[in-house]
Image (tube, rainbow, N blue to C red; front, side, top):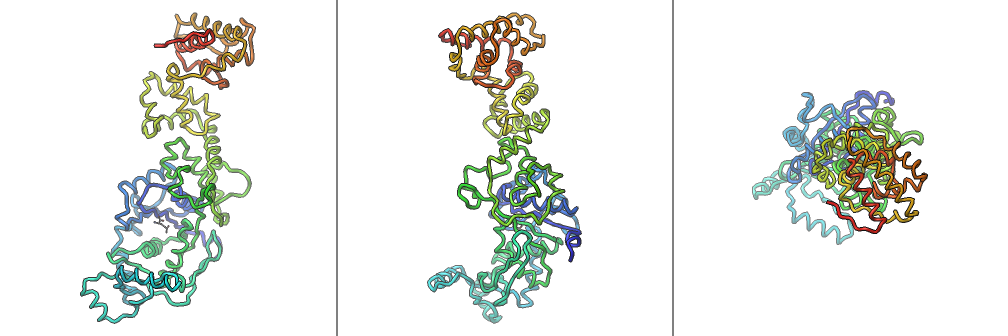
Length: 511
Ligand code: GLU
């Protein structure tokens, strides 16, 4: 098969188990399947692997879908977009299909019923351990007589079904990411369960039946599944089916522990919903995850979704662990914030405020500004170029909206000659007082500051330093005239008064 043929009618699938919400590791699998499908004009399937009903969480499926959509990952087939040729797409609705194939394998004697109890299995493992042998099922029910089986069944035991592995058999495949991988049937833990004693097929069995019946051409999944693949190949062989292509994606690692990212790693956000809440842009997360386990040709790192789809090439999947780099993510997010339109950022920020899922969002929900959107717009315009996350901008919104209640650090004010500072502040204060009677005028604060400079003969740092401190509490601030625009005249006067009184050594009380 040449490469072109290999990529005709590509069908891939993302197959989450709704036992949790969309984790960054799941998102990585989903994203590579998506890029692959879109690059080759193929079909992306969403299949829900929900056979482990005890572990399913309420709204797990819905949450997976919502977060995929937020990331910009869509699918062509799935529970909500069924293709009658392949439906249903939830494994819990496909149990009859699996039973049919289990029966077939039982009839052929390739699979068999196993009545071993949990206690017996435990004893088996203990003895093996004592002999220094790796734990494995010893095949004790393989080839047992019908009488034995009847007796066990009559005693009330419920059998599981195991697939018999031929001895000394090699299961090998050419993994798209990892290269040649092979396992020996003698080292695979013995004949393995394909149907549990409760009648539910195991993950390995259901996945093979589904991938085959759904015409999946390429299986892209995390490399934690590598040890499952020889078992799945054994099932394909037993059923006489052709295997799909396999690609095992490098898992995400924590750079500090140098271990696989674990749910216990508190310094890394684990779920896509958390990234959203913390003010990361979906495009930035998409771009960032695409680089976890893959890299394009060249040095560029900022790629839109369309560019990634165009560039995506399975040949560049990495063999080694993908280290999660928080600084890089923040840098990328800042780049996306910088490039985005202010209007769009405001939409996203107001969305976050509405959802109210973080402290800062809840705080902003309580703001009673008459034109909150305009206020957010002005703050965003000022801080867009220097913010890493939307929540950074939101914190500024909160600060400026409640500036009179802020505990401003005015200490730096006395760093400069007191008289100079006072004359700057007083001159500005006088000008603002004159404005008070005509609040509808649009004031050009930049011009006003220039006039203060002309009047006092003070310029540069000596002029801006006191203004920065008075209006932001910081010695350096972006575009102080824009910041003044965020305030009412009375607020500006209050802030100037506060500074003037501080320099005079008076304590001021504000109502
Ligand atoms: N349900 C499996 C998981 O969530 C899917 C593995 C696969 O893609 O085969 O890990």
